[in-house]
Length: 257
Image 1 (tube, rainbow, N blue to C red):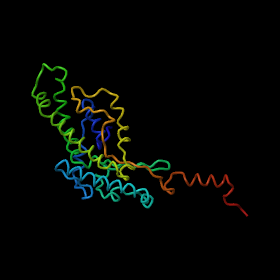
Image 2 (image 1 turned 60 degrees about the horizontal axis):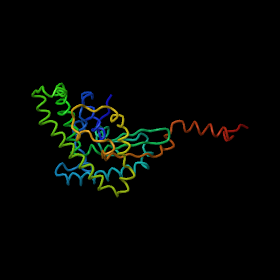
Image 3 (image 1 turned 45 degrees about the vertical axis):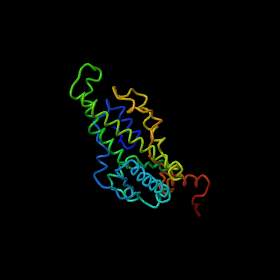
Image 4 (image 1 turned 120 degrees about the vertical axis):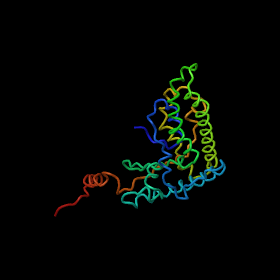
């Protein structure tokens, strides 16, 4: 099963695998079915206004992640939508939490908050992907033309390039704006997110795509945030059992008589 596309590296991987990717369902379309609370809303206007809104939203999320470490243990069953003030379907796309033996790992896919990301991800899934496959039989036969091929090469693909380049500019500028922000730097998870998709760059990309749509993985920016913190002691599986075993070994168990 394909992973949901929620970050710039994930979308770049989807682009590279357009020829082999299963029919996608747009994460942005699912995400946009309910309005976000004002904290997360990013202006869908000029590039400068989008950058300013994204900087504000990412700073707020980084601060929430900082507070999450102390708040997590106060919940018997941690309620992601309640803590982050999201609808459940939004929380499922934006936040991923996994409990390990003694730690908690949290990822927040902040790229998905950007209108420029939503636009290009939706366009790839709902227009570029089907247009590519309609035109694909002619990619290796340039002397054969069709209306599908011409529409893809003259309209669909240039539009995708324009959307993609705008997205990279926005995310890169937001990263620069936050480059001195301690909370962002402490939670920056772009490197980890790129590693999740590295295997895709070891495969041949979709044929016929221009270099603008096939950037090197290590050059991709991302506002993905992540952090680890200790799992509260009372939530650690087997902890009580391990403590009892230690007590017995030290002779601290109950004594009769």
